[in-house]
Amino acid sequence: MREQRLLERLKSWENEPGRRTREDSGRIINSVLSHLQRVLNTKMGNVQIADDFGLPDFTDLIYNYPEAVRGLERSIQVMIQKYEPRLRLVRVRFVPQEDARLALDFQITAEIDNENEKIPVLFESQMDTNGRVKIKG
Image (cartoon, rainbow, N blue to C red; front, side):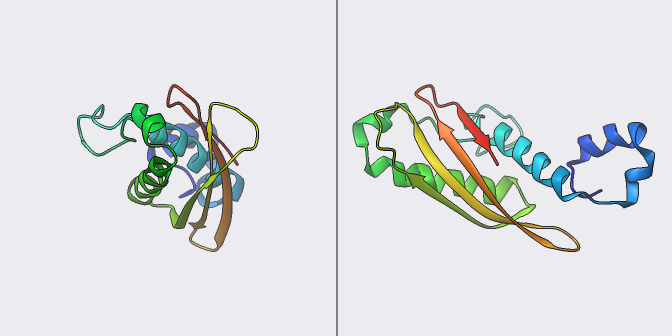
């Protein structure tokens, strides 16, 4: 049942007592995806227990584009490595778009280090003009 975060496990123990010993790779991927969504949509400085939790404000990104994109890639990667311990070998890559959308696309590749197996994952993320991140896997 390591595929879920602690609060998710506590909730599901009452609803699915038979699952306590079985692991499900789909659940772990969905749990990681959900957690990444929360982490990457938190602005740095808004969590009292950890000042470095979340992404820094990138509203000035437009003035330093495209150099600032590399800093954003690094910030995303560091945040994932620090606050999502189920992922290993994390790589974040900016994916330039040909159309004129006002959004930044990133590809996140990693490996979920499960007890019995290593699961490669690929997540597509998009940051909109408000700094909101959408992730799908």
